[in-house]
Image (cartoon, rainbow, N blue to C red; front, side, top):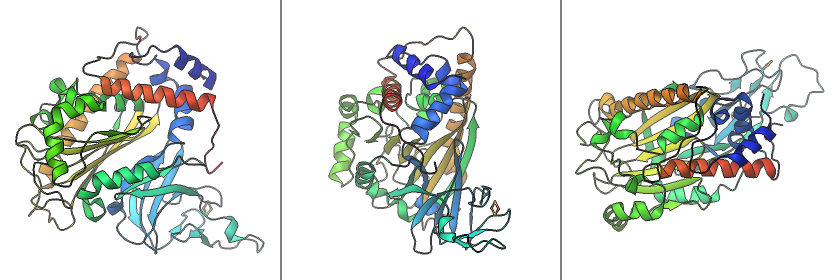
Length: 412
Ligand code: FES
């Protein structure tokens, strides 16, 4: 299996502006290096706060080898824990989501409070101190109603993300929305191929006929650099900002995350087949229907669309060198009534279709990269600036972590 030295050597020899050498997309050692240096160290978007609406509501997810449990406590706080029992390590919650008054391990019934403290361990010796065996916490922050976690022992500063998320997303009031639908698919492709595909619309005209009815595939609008985005979307940005919605392109200095509000094509208001709203009740304080989409990506695992009638969150988690889970959540106004104010099928159809189309192109990309004939090819400087930006962030981040300070998971 490739070592970190092999990864570093490959990084140093990569050709900027070209796709990565084959092992970055296929090799178990390179994948393990990604987990340890990216996925176990960076903030990751997980759920919307309304996905755990009540005391004891929980969601589970898997980040590489780390099972994670996110639960709302009796005090209303949302916390994250390693989903691994302090007795002999069993997963405590296997369900994807649910609600419990306490967290009881199914193996021997050790029981934890919602704040992670051990409250019951039957027939153990008296010298076991429960305070030593609480669930291991994971850094957990909520920003604008979106829950992020970080598995690192020392998490990067979250304050800039939180401040900017609350500024840009506040008109959508995610905290007070409700979940209308969720969908999970597994794409048989390396996680970086999933993100690369997301960061360009070079493929959209050929792959996404439904999405292209409303979503502009102009790279000058959805690219990754302020000059291009502002030029084409300037009128829309000015109109939205004048109405109180922060909209202007903002990218974090290291390029890890970005906000920008873009217009839809023509009079379209939502990602529906005819562009009309999917929900009759607008979210939050968005002042008009044709507010376009507030785009928010945060590497390594998420891209999102915040509209006037709904918010759609996308997160991915790596499963193996060549498989990635993509999870989609649709949120609507808490008072919107299914069958009256919206139809779930109409609300979700475009992105369900688009996700399946993306799955197909990612899987064909992976199959072709597995070929012994594969070699890195050039990204388009007109159409794939977002991909170039992502790969440059990835390469710079990994290189810095392989050569700089070490960091370890909180559980280690
Ligand atoms: Fe959880 Fe034994 S492993 S109670």
